[in-house]
Structures are given as C-alpha cells and as structure tokens.
Length: 189
Image (cartoon, rainbow, N blue to C red; front, side):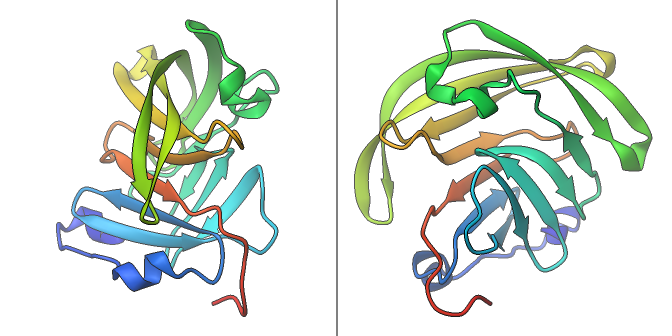
C-alpha cells in the first residue's frame, strides 16, 4: 500500500485472492491493492498483516492503521454498532468515538457517526451472487472539518461485513475492502 504515495500501480493476481490459505482482506485504494492475512482463528477484533503495513478491524471497521503516511487509531466503545452488531441498529443511530492521527500529532479528535440502513444489494463475490444489507455510516470530525460516508455490506445470515468502502483519514484515499471470511487451510504464509 506504500505505493499509494508515489502513484505506481500494484495489482494482486486473482489467483492469490481467489485461493486463500488463510482468512484474507483485499484492499484497493487509489491505484494500489494490498492483500492482508489474519492469524488462524481470528474473529471480532482482527489484526491483518501486510508486507509493510498492519491494520486492525473490529467486526469489519478499521480501528487501527499503521505503516502508511497517516497512522489511524479509532477505538470503539461498548455501545458502538460494530461491537453490538450492525444489523441491530435503527436508522439515525449516533455514536461518538475518539480518533487519533499520531504521526501528525492530532489526538483526541471527536468523530460523530450516524448510521442508516441502505438497500439490500446483490454482490458477486467468489463467483456467487448473494444479497447483502448495506449499512451507511456518515462520519463527521468537526475539529478538522472532515466528513465522509462509509459503506458496509453485511451478510444477513452471519452479521459479518463482507465488503466495505471506508475513509479512515482525510489525506488517505477511500479503501475498498473485501473480506474473504474463509477458514485457514494448510500452512499459513
């Protein structure tokens, strides 16, 4: 993902994405792609490891990002919809969380998030069409005048986020994320 900063293209071959030996996360951001792996048995709060970066997700939402031009820490409280379950939210649900951008010395920033159910949409993942409930998260960080809308496609049967588009920081491109949710098979890389 470091390639994001210099504009060179980086594409992950389809065979690497479609035949994972472990639970993987594919992120496309700008002109780059990154393939991350999770330790065997990971669930809920997952640390994903790339070649030079690491990120942490909590039930599909980025809660920490390390190794890019902007590091991000966004801790989730016990009442956060990603802790209690995205499919359990009511339209207009609001939460407040604290976000840090330590490399730019911006800490303790307030992020206000408002949630809405989008339509049920059909996505083709792993060659299969399946219905997913879209959840829209409108975020506002008034101290730095940043606002964005994140999108999450949730499997209604499992409650797992299968795909998302997230804006973790103002100076980073949107991250289009695809979670495989495959159990580990064979030796891990």
